[in-house]
Length: 410
Ligand SMILES: Nc1ncnc2c1ncn2[C@@H]1O[C@H](COP(=O)(O)OP(=O)(O)OP(=O)(O)O)[C@@H](O)[C@H]1O
Image 1 (tube, rainbow, N blue to C red):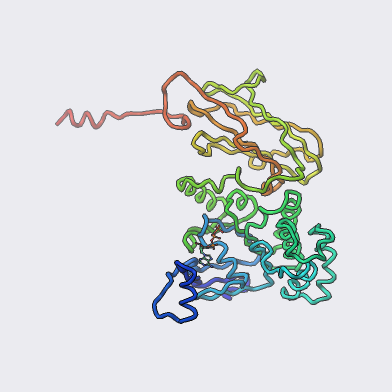
Image 2: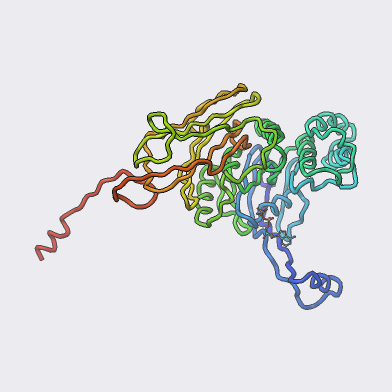
């Protein structure tokens, strides 16, 4: 390992998959050692080099197929690289594909035991942790049933409980938070924040740069099996979001993250767009002020809440997203009916139709408590033709005569 503070060191790692056109080609190639190459090579990871220092919390983003899961599997040692060196310093706990590492025939309890021992704990240590794992997973008597009888939610609960209770030095999470119900997601994010504050090394893969931005300090943007950009989380996610806009890919839209919400702890009851006379309105003149009033019910006390409002145009362009975390506004955390009002002092959007999304999240703005996509619509009109595009930018013109004078002299 290059440095003793490095938790993970990846040196010139590549992973090539053999892709066969027909399943029988694989058979021919393997069984009969066909001289002819019946496959093409696909470089899922292409000469990748990077290190992760102890205690770093890194988000890995990138569109589908960019190699995120492959590199995580290589670090977790569930997949062998074709070439290159991988060094990992510490106990790795990986939440990769749903319940991977679980034997479907074993009961939950047996899988916890096996996993714990594989992770390097003694049987006694796992036994000691078992009540905590059971309590965290909340799957009741299913702990003694074969995991093949589990719902996907139960799988995730047990896998997560197991992963965080084996005292990992390095935690690898691949989209796992997006599964499971919201209450469980809240519990997980609290635990992840704790592990982060304890200085554990965390690699967090997500399609969703919004989530990465709110949880990680650094980000790696993968593209075609390589690192396209690495750096501070805001810089990388900003550029990634910009890139994705041009790709016409909406997969990083906050409207699309999270699972269907069940057992809500917060419910958005009503949203109104109001004019300055406090009347409901959906047509505004260019430059008018207006506000968005959100009534919501918080059903139980939380550590913190973030509320946000996003404006989109008809072509689904994300115009402006604001939230209370960005503006350092604290919302009430006690249960009850509450109201949040966002005042736009001057709406400088050019004439057209716009849509509003409303979202509430827990304190780190990673887990969605309630989200209403394209929930309200408003129109901007002006009657004048003074600019084109989406928004009006304050400006002034100047024109210099010097060029013309020079020509006049000639
Ligand atoms: N066993 C395999 N055989 C052939 N190709 C594979 C195999 N596993 C992965 N790939 C390919 O390797 C590429 C990288 O896959 P990977 O799952 O790492 O991407 P990803 O960035 O995690 O994508 P996603 O966000 O969709 O999960 C993809 O094009 C995928 O189709």
